[in-house]
Amino acid sequence: MEKLANNVKSEIFDVLPLYPLKDLWKCSVVDIESLGAIITPTSPHFGLFLALDALLLDVERIGRVAKGLLQKGLVYLCAWGPDCERVRDIFDEIAIGMDPEQDKAVVMTTWHSDESLQEAVWFFINSAFPDEAYARTCQDWICAPIGHSDWEKIIRESQSSR
Image (cartoon, rainbow, N blue to C red; front, top):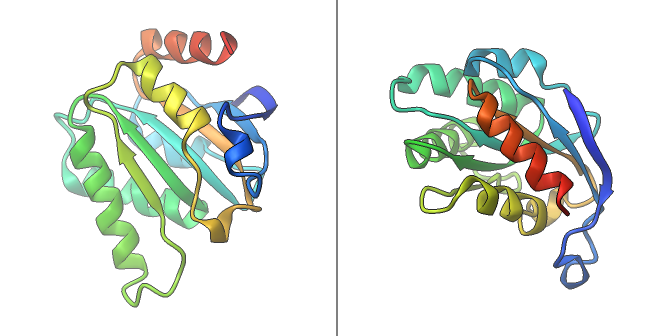
């Protein structure tokens, strides 16, 4: 993981003063399975921007990764890329399966199929906030472009243009 920025203030932060500033990270990997091994959050909970072409990935493969990331403290997922709606749905199903009584705080998920990569990254940095129960413990926000160096470049440029 590579740290992109410390203590990033959302452009809408004043509306939600309860939430801490974000530390932005980039975690580029060639395949989705590598993500679980490489992501090592420094805060108890974290947000993840997943840029992924999931058209050829089966449910079990995505589900295994989702379970591992949720166990590491994932509390907010933004999915972008081909078939991102399905990716978000799988993460939701795994999160619900891990808490069938629904007695924990909600794991927030969004998909961004109709937005450019730059727009989706802007949302992740400025508008994505976890459930209030995780507000004080979710400082790491990780951008993970999977298998596309051009996406990695766009993510880096989107963050640095702030």
